[in-house]
Image 1 (cartoon, rainbow, N blue to C red):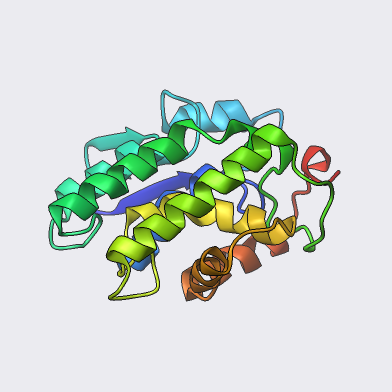
Image 2 (image 1 turned 135 degrees about the horizontal axis):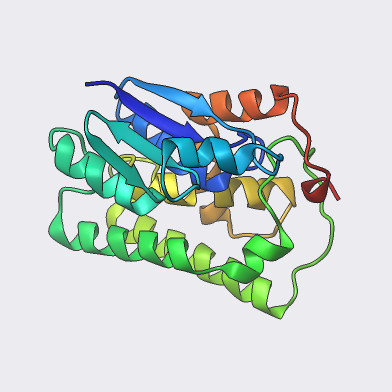
Length: 217
């Protein structure tokens, strides 16, 4: 059965990147359907694929799954031979906790520094107190995971996992807006940026013909 992933603009859709990057890193072949967002016909096209009318969404045979975390869990259950989560139970619990925190939190960082893979790196404004707190929390979480479980590789839990896929858009934000993070966090961000799949996403986003002015300010 073919895996088909519905995604939005690669230049701007941080939620689309997460399952896309995980599928690539798991070496699971899939077809991608790109639907540009914020256009008059966007909602109609999204609803034709998924009743949620949002990206990302995954079709696999008779299964339809939407929301990044749900897609991640579906892949973990459907392909148990792939290391979606860390194998160690304690590490796996932390990875799931971090993913849930990323999924529901850091709204100040998201609002102040929207994902934009086509934007040349440059600082735009120092973070306010709430965004600064988000940055500090992410930095601390990365250092904690790396310090406790990262000895066997360059990612949060050594080998690449769903946690890295969930935080990949934050790497873009930190780089794009030149936000100040620790040396340890910088080293981790560079490991994500060095992934061929991540570079493929960035290059594709920059080559897209759709430019959303709301994200270019």
